[in-house]
Amino acid sequence: MNKALIIKIISSEYTILLEDRSIQKAILAGKMRLDRHPVVGDYVEYITSDNKYVIQNILERRNYLIRPNLANIDNAIIMMSTKDPSFSYELVNRLIMLIEYADIRPIICISKADLGDNQEIEEIKTYYETMNYDVIISDISNDFRNLEGILEDKITVLCGQSGVGKSSLLNKLQPELNLKTNEISRALNRGKHTTRHVELFEIYGGYIADTPGFSSLDLTQVDKDLLASKISVFKPYIGECRFNNCMHINEPDCKVKEAVGKGKIKQSFHKTYKDIIEFIISENLKGNRHRTLK
Image (tube, rainbow, N blue to C red; front, side, top):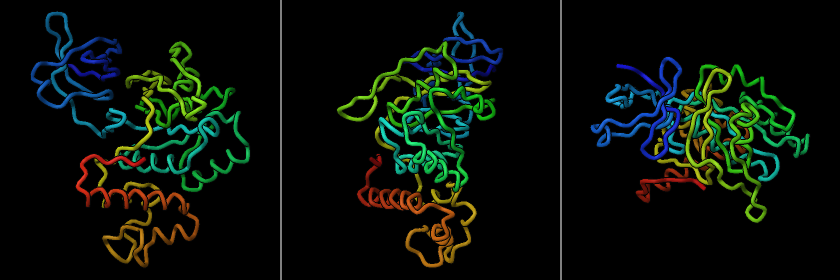
């Protein structure tokens, strides 16, 4: 059976990339309407019938995000501006943890750097590079050729608040896209949503997704007992604590906490982790099925 990659979904119309690099419109086979639906990033099997491309099956996913609805992601570029809206360590830290939980590589992009304070930008860069996270700087003069190696042969998602410049970055990478952007809402200090659906764009030999902005993080699928083992800066210390079931919060002889004390893990980064764990525990006690952290 033929294979393809879903690069866009609008309503019941699926846009697929075939193995010969051609792009076609497709529909779902009737049997699939009763099963799980494909999402952008899914590799699927299809047939042709009556000159139509019909999706028959979804191939196994490597990973999956609920918000945005996207599968098989390699990288997530977390965009956060220094101004309009202001940089939020807490939001970036939450995003890193949610992204790493899904086995996706996070990359921090400081956008609108030409509007920000150079000292603040350097502090942000040092904060994350100290924990071995990659940081790139975005301003009006950057041509982003340094992204070629990151994007090639990968599926990458852009994430972050509305107004931080996700669509603007894509326009820089590929001007012919001419994606719509909007000014920041001065009253709310956040951007207006300009992206209405998830779509993959071919750039630098890979695919990158622009996604709708959001104001909360969906923690529905996060297992508190697995989260720490997924966070890359925690990984060297997992299994080294006194207790095998250490949650790295209040336990004695915790190697993660020792690393925090030595500055190898930023204290505020660890606090974000504790806040997420405590939130999940609280929501589990309430029996809530859908958990979001504002």
